[in-house]
Length: 84
Image: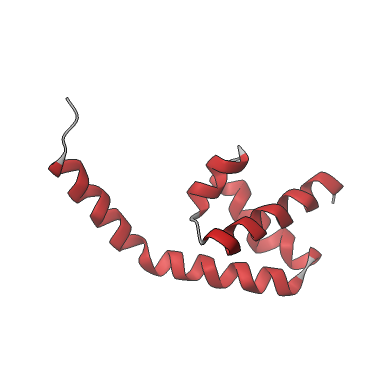
């Protein structure tokens, strides 16, 4: 694996752990796709740093369990403040 990919995977994981952000937010911050963030954090990181991989996996699992709530809040906000 190329050095820049390893470095990106570690940086993304650290950012997600520190901020508790979603995959989508991390993708926007690092200028990559959601698929890249997910692959970096779930597959590539396992080969690089197993402990970091487990930590980021915990945050991703929490975010996944809460996503239906965030979606409902976004829909509520959309209809409370419609854009014309």
